[in-house]
Length: 144
Image (cartoon, one colour):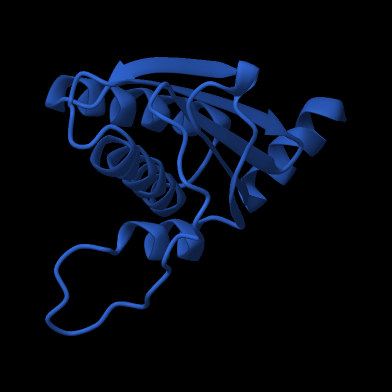
């Protein structure tokens, strides 16, 4: 399992991207899978900073990543006020639209994207998962 604690400022996001990329590379993900997953994780974190923290770049976030067989599981937690529970808009890209692509990209890249249950009822949790074919080979190789 990998745990990354960061803030929503430029340095925090740079560290997030680098650490997620290194972890995925170590697991044997190919470069296109890695780029897509890093994008989805960054979009999730950017949405937290923008919507949950209201643009406050000092807000704390924690990303936990783990592998279960051929699946990668991502759990992004924050300490912002609890979200109102309304469904997230997932609009396809459209001409002339500025912003609003984050949820669309996350759902397009990941196999599952949903709200989780915060620990001790504090903040918000976003859970995502992705099946990665390259990990199957590695799991078979490790066990055989």
